[in-house]
Image 1: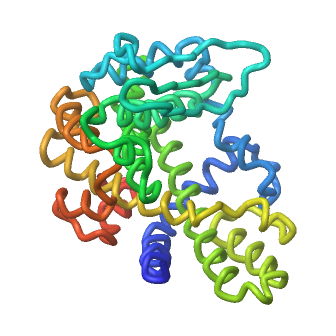
Image 2 (image 1 turned 30 degrees about the vertical axis):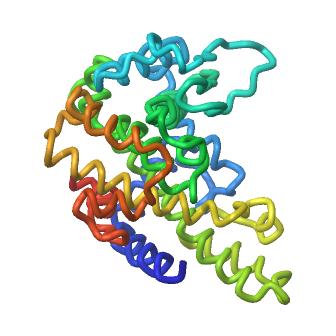
Length: 324
């Protein structure tokens, strides 16, 4: 864990110049030029919705575009009987997208409710990655390897790689009729959000490691939580929010390992398939082979198959710096 945290700190430093430039630009775009120099963390969810772009990414098209994006990879989700889609907009339905893998590969539920904005598309594709992973598991595997993970770093690789489609400028141009310049601008916004989330989680991991390393005095650790997350994100975090922001079982570390691994997978797809990896059935074939193993391999074993060391953050740094 400490080695992972150190590697992530280095990666955060390597993307800092690019992140700071994007942060100032998109904080101004989303919150307005009269915003506080350091916005409160309470605005985080609002920033993620990228409201200035909402007219382009309407809730009415979210299901259609996301299903078409999956179909371009060879996954016709509407025709896969073991994925139970619940995409309706009902008044009492929670807006948070999720997957419930009741009995993979036979029964996998994908639940979303579009509210408007690019985040709807990202959330749908993120959960589509989970759903397709579980629905493509080899049914001959024991239940343990069809459903129960050693950790969540493996399953999040596949949700991240589908969400990464929204960071491809050509995707924005193809599905929303944008000019190349507009498409690059909107894809840049998604890279900004990814960098912001990555730095937030990297900071959280450091704080959580310190918290559990000195649990006897954990009550005094909240000041470090506020200081570090504020410094690494540029948003104002408060000391009394530490415990409610803590992930059970170091899930923050699983997310971060998946961040590293999905970037390695994307680099592999770029090498094997090309820049159009996000719309090629060849990508779907590669993913199907990985999906079929269910939850049996570790995230680190996937890294070896892709030709990377587990803690090689070069592909991630390259992606968040906009160089890939």
